[in-house]
Length: 423
Length: 132
Image (tube, rainbow over all chains, first blue to last red; front, side, top):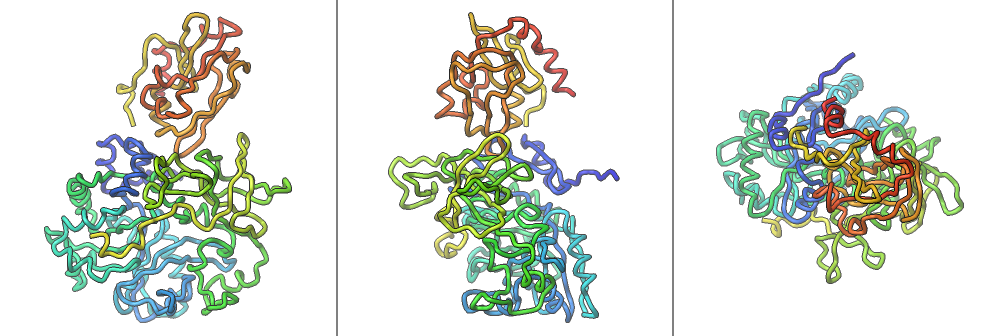
């Protein structure tokens, strides 16, 4: 069956600006415009904008919506906010995954509590149909309506320390918008007829849903709006951000930034194996003592049984050289045993090692004369638990390099910085 | 990405199917990758070249060129002994992107069989490959 490649509303803009295009998730997307390295660094030093309209979203509405999501989504919506584990409240969002009965990942997602009995679930490109179907199939008599919003929303991300300054220049009331906007919160609505739409408007009146989230590990926002409004916003942000060296960024920089931020790529770092024993335990509803789960959800029994045991670990290399991840890759332990495969192997061009320690271009304590030459980083999936600091070799059919298991890669990331410091 | 008409494809070098160029300079043949190759690869961050003195056959893999995204093999455009490598690439791999035919040259080879260089493609033939 032949499927035509889809296009986002900004497709012509990308092509007119010389982007190197490729197919991603069925969409014709920009990999980079002129330089992945420059784009990656722009997000660490100033700001970058990303066309993310290829991502999918579904809404879940009705008196049974919360219950349906509690059953299908890994995170405990009644106990997921902050160290005191408060319930998800209006204007807050949370990361987790949708699993099948084997505990394998269907997709990861962010669930937004829009208003009473109304949620938006943002998932990966091309996954709208599958996730909507999954929710629909598990309704079990609950009162909830699931709507697939694929290709009906425009979305773009602005990420980097200057993101709020730049975005503020095009908002009607930036002071009000940025007040009380912690990490993983959101305001506004895409639908102009919703009373929530007044919370965030551009200075031309366009309503947007503004979320303090992203996929780079840096400070910034995801912006949802009507597709016919996105090009104007994109161009205005590029104009407003000139003095901050704002740069349009493609998927290659998006990938290297997320890898350095230890964020998983769906269907690559999470997938057809149990969603457990990985660097993202906050996505699972663990009890305080981490021995069990606080709620029932699809996949719970499989995760508890743990018949197929895999461990996913983040790693960082010695220098920027990497290997090709995927099927042909191997992870080899100190005894020469092949213990697994490499899921992701990327180069974070904003960091490097100095006397063994990792520094970023953004590190306040970086040594004098430090130049970030780039550092190989990613994830391995192995058949035994490894420890932070442990060395393993990773290899493809050409090259073998020694890497270190780590619990973090790029230091001094800005995602969680207080808003007051960023405006 | 560059349109074919925007590519820099000098007349005075010969090309391979693997998007490399080769140019006779006195006794040796100097080689590198074409403007098309560097444009497709994007930012090059590392070039792995063999030791001077090593020998390879035509078509044999001799090294790699690494971009931010991926690691790609490099193949000998002709067989022979490596007589020089471009040391500048160790500190400035971006020379391959910015100046692929001059400052970004990769290796010099003493050809084992002069006929192999004749078999390489002219600019016109290489353009035909790019046009698909």
